[in-house]
Amino acid sequence: MAILLSISFILFLLYSCLIIYYTIGWVTIPLFNPNLKEQIFSTHISVIIPARNEAQNLPVLLQSLLAQTYPVHLFEVMVVDDHSTDSTSAILHNYTRFNIRKISLAEYDGLEKINSYKKKAIEIAIKESKGTLMVTTDADCYLPQNWLATIAAFYEKEQPVFIAAPVVINNAVSFIEIFQALDFMTLQGITGAAVYKKMSSMCNGANMAYEKNVFYEVDGFKNIDSIASGDDMLLMHKIYKRYPNKVLYLKSANAMADTQPVKSIAQFFNQRIRWASKADKYDDKRILPILILVYVFNLLLFIIPVASIFYPSHFNVFSVTFSSFQYWLLLLGLKTLVELIFLIPVAIFFKKIWLLILFPLMQPFHIIYCIIAGWLGKFGSYQWKGRKLN
Image (tube, rainbow, N blue to C red):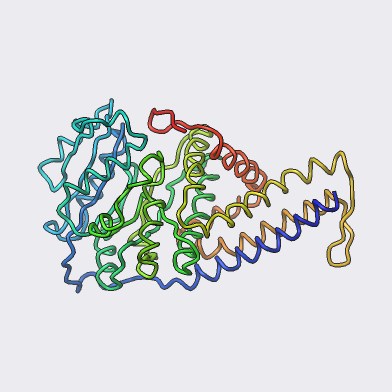
């Protein structure tokens, strides 16, 4: 037991250094607030949206795209209907009089043999696109009116080949929605810090952009198309490998995508297991030691209170002796404090500061979730859009 406690303390110190590094990274990212009224744009953009059974969400997304301040002649919207069985197709038909194009995935041969329909949808849209900058989002998102204008201004000023942009969950007050909003906000803060510090390459497919020619330069989704998930980070890693200094994070509230939370615990775990399933496929191997550190540390935080019941022990920290259970409470409290220091500036940016009141209460649930999702992401299967995948 003493060895277990000693290891957990060492891992806590490493974890704290990591979170402090993320904190420094996040607060040093410069905010991007261009004068859009004086901007003269020249970038042709193709917005790509894979959609499967999204009839409930699409109208909100499409209306937000029609309200964009970006010049209409400089962007197109391409919605790829992935074998929807609801009224998705009919809804898209009502918008074809605008600069919104519908592509039906069912019209392409051999799709029954592929494992990632979303990657195929994006790939086909890119092939038929007219833009030079591909911008992807999800069908359950809402986009502010200066979204495209801000992305284009950033692209034209900084000249990146890949842009990772912020995403926020539009949560209600149920437990599962608050929990995932906190978890997702944490991941978003880490994403921004990691990309800015060139520590690792992270992003979310609900809000990212990349050059069309660079997509083809790295052979698109080749060699990662057998993996169901990973249309965002796995592609980002391929691009980062070739252009490490041209993969940037866009920190701007005007470029932030609002996305919907899942509504049940089962859906939440399915989503997180899907995300975790691609962890060992990352080409950017710098992220793997971090994932291992976080997983093992959380695993020990689960084991220690259980083990203390059967193997009571004592541990000395800074010349103070604690029982094993008291030590676990101390460790949990210190972990929460370190994470709150990181989350305060992140929550201010995402306008979710009120969520931090509930953050300490979510810690035990977060530990359990990390263990389960991490394990099943490697050895389990999940449901995604009505398909069972491994």
